[in-house]
Length: 66
Length: 274
Image (cartoon, rainbow over all chains, first blue to last red; front, top):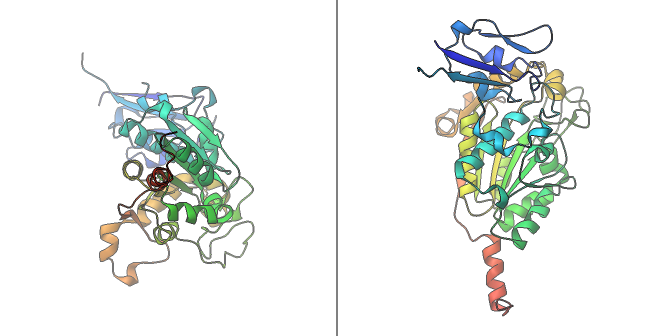
């Protein structure tokens, strides 16, 4: 699926809520304690991560076809 | 992509200082989304908060905000509302702030039916001061002041609010973000004292003491144990375990609100022409 996952690193505290609640294991917390995208191609743009991120650090958008 | 709710935050104050995984951020987002849904004027909305982790929220929200004394958010908000009834006044408070230090103010705010929307961030503990047991720490759950588990019975703030006279009473959780937003919208719609309890996670103080240090696990606990009111009413008593709790709209009744009643007094006393 064509998705854009935007991460605002300055806001992320690496709590891992998004990574655990993601149904497709797209995300993981890096060694630096920030979230990163592991498998963007697996993302189904359900938006669970964005909905429950306590720090407003992750945004998921479906790519609009040009 | 920028989200529209971001306009209601003081961008230079973010990221907020809450711990990693704290549910307060989620509830604060639900509050601003409810404000956005209702289309409230940013210049005609006042956020009043007390003291505690949750009450820090007023500092991040781009409205006229009041960060008041511990437990006294409702009296300050009552003053704001009576001085200028056209303002929308929203109170942000925590479980300790609202039911312990401000317990009396809370019940009398309900009784007077002042047109306020009170959002109680219930993280079951005093987070900021080091994890002491609050009146809403569930019985048998641990806290720094209850190392063997709390023996006190905990308040059910929703039933308390209803009994004290609030005209809109609802509960939701940080997991059910959209439902929580809808409950707050309902509270903003109600003319009178609206009370919304938002169950949220405190992984640092409450979670670590109670074998739930992972914030995501705490949210899954909410998902598994929160029962919608309609289903709760049909649930047999033996299935209503200690962990399970109902969420949804519990009570909504139309009553004269305090500002209207007070205005009538002004009319009778002949002060309206001033």
